Each structure stands twice: as structure tokens, then as C-alpha cells.
Length: 230
Length: 254
Image 1 (tube, rainbow over the protein chains, first blue to last red):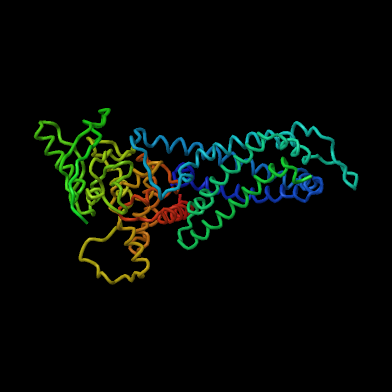
Image 2 (cartoon, rainbow over the protein chains, first blue to last red; image 1 turned 45 degrees about the vertical axis):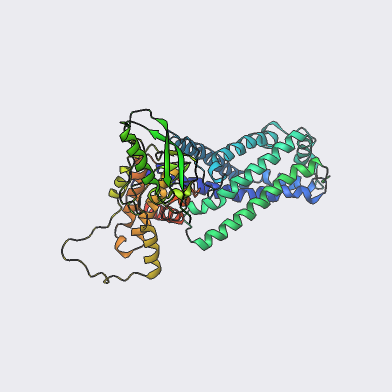
């Protein structure tokens, strides 16, 4: 077989989804960890410092390109697979196939992924675009060393002062939870883990991971809206 | 279990040939015994249709004892009907109650075109087997059966995979019309045994290539296939195929 055949075969396409999926799973840990600094309750000092470090360090800026590619490949490959798979049954069933042993969320990865994408566009517009391109409309914070850094914390506070934004973010996190609940263990299956014992462990870790990550993300806008962090 | 008789309403997919659009027809059957098989109930209905001078319903069947993989049908939204680990021919009418309405459709997938009524063309599976689902053996006198040692757990796992009867219910149930459970069972069945090692890599590459060519979808690990499989083939074999495929692809000589 030619090397390119790998990327056009059904199994190869799934490998691409699984590898980028695992990469994004790892990214979410970093993202949640950094954002959790808002709960230091120090008026956002620690959070702004970490955000500044992430934005100003060359290594991380290079990694950001990889992250962007990871997102793009996962999104496009996912959408392509969803449309290709749907086309494999031109005449559908009159009675919808109902198999309770197969979970609804495993059969709705395309839909959940699309909901997450819609949320992501809003999320990028809220934070990524201002911090990278258009600028943050709040005065910079001056550190003890005299260095001036972006006040991303103030942007977060103002963004999450609107109820509809908080609701959309929480819904985004719920979609992410279901997507991860299937995606986490499915990725390992695609990557070839077939031992029932390991698969059981992976499934449990997947549940714990999805629950903690999504709860942490959902609590961020909620705690800002309710004024739990100052 | 107590014997009873029932009257049923059947909504059956009728299609003259592959190019016909097809439609549902409603039929009524009376005095159906709870001890009849689902296909015997269809035999009764067909007798009725023949007596009325109508075209009987075409459906696939052969052994009628759950081992040949010929019978198909999607019954009330489930391939092979409501019973777990069961084929349509082994589904008995005691699964239904008097007055039930039963909708019967053919297996649906582009790779399984309808030939007539409930009969679909599953020769795509044969072509996948031809692409690599075999081992090459020299002609001549038979080799001593015990000449090559096989570990017990490997033999058991290979046997569990070999239980696949190739009925295609996995494809019918899958939202992606994927044939991965079938292909993975065949790949595992031969790949687990010493006799399957020489062609192990070309087998998986060629069978997956043929599967894609036939127009089946990609697997998303939903587990619907395993749930409807009359032989309970585990989707863990699909993970095994994914691993085998990548090993074969990465070490392919060209």
C-alpha cells in the first residue's frame, strides 16, 4: 500500500480523529489548570500572570500553532466523516433503529461536536481574538516589577456578567461532557487497545476526566456571575 | 410456556427489483401459533398470498437453525428482531402478543442493495473475504492436525471470532453502515492462529481496502453492532483490527 492510502482508508481516518482527540484531551487539562487560577481569589493577579506567561513565551506560541492545527484537523475530519458515513445509507429505515445497549451520545458525536464548535466560535470571539488581535478594552495591570500585562481577568469578569453568556457556556460544557464521555474511550479503542481489562479502566478514567474537566469549566462562568470570585 | 394463538398486522416492505422505489404493504395474519418461528409465520402469509393470486414476499432463509447467516430482516427497528443473540429464523412468535403491529424492513445500506422485497445482496461480504479472509495451504496430503501447537486462550478467542456467520446485522444496525464488526471478526479469527501469520499484514490491509471500496462506513465504536450480533461478536475485535491495520500499514514495504 502507498503511504497516502493510510489517510484515505476508513481506519486511517479514525486514527487521525483519535490522535487529535487525545491531543485535545491533554490540552483541556492545561487549559482548565490555568483557568483554575481565577479561584486564587486574589483579584486575578495569579491568573493574569499565568495568562501573560502563556502568551509571551516563544515555546508556547509555537505549540499554539500545533494546537490550532489539532483543532482544525479534528473538526474538519470529524465533519467529513460524519457526512461520508451518513451517505452510506441512502434509503433509511421506516422504524428508527433502537438499540438501548448503544448509548445515545456515542451515536451523536457529530451533533455534539457541532454544538461544541458553535460554542468554540463564540469562545474564540470572547477571549482569543481580543487577546491576540483586537486588544483587551481594559487598562493593563502593572506588576511589582513595573511590567505591564493584559488584564484578561477583567475581560472574563465583564464577559461573564451577562446571564445568556453564562448559560451558553454551561451548555457548551454539557455538550463537551457527553462528547468526551464517548470520545475518550473510543479514541483508545481506535488506537488499538483491545484488552477488556484496560478498556474497563480507560472507561472509568474517561468518566472521571470528563466529569472533572467539564465541571471545572462550567463553574468558571458560574462563579464569576454569582460573584464567588472577586 | 403456555401456547396461544394470535392475530397480527404486518407492515412489510415490498419492492419488485433493485430499481423499483418500493413501498410498505399491510397484511393481516390470523391464528398464528406462539410456537411458530417468525419465518414460519411468513410461510403462512405467503401461502395466503399465493391462494389470493398475489406475489409472495421474497425473503432470505436457508438452514433455519441460526447458523447459516442467510436470514435478515429488520423487525420493529431491530435487525433479527427483539431477542438478544438471535437470528430471525430462531425468533419465535411468543415474542409477540395478539393484535401486535409488526413492521418488517430489509437490511438497509448502500452496500447491501435490495434485490427483491426483503432480500438484499450481501455479496460485498464475499468480496471482502476474497480479498484476504483465507489462509494459503499447500495441496497434497492433509497436515497432522496437532502438528502446530495453539495456545488454549488463543484458540478460544479465534473460535469466538469464527462464530461470525456473516449475516450483516452489524451493518444494518450501524448508524454508519460500517462492516467493521464482520471484518474484524474475520481478521481476528485468522490472525490469532499460527496458520494465519504469514498473510496477517496483507490480509488486514486488503480486507479493509475492499470494505471501503464496497461503500461501507467508518466505525465510531457505538456498540450497536455487538448488541444485535446473533453470535455476540465483541467490538473489542474492532480495536484489535485497528491495531493490526496500523502495524501492517506502518511496516508495509512500499
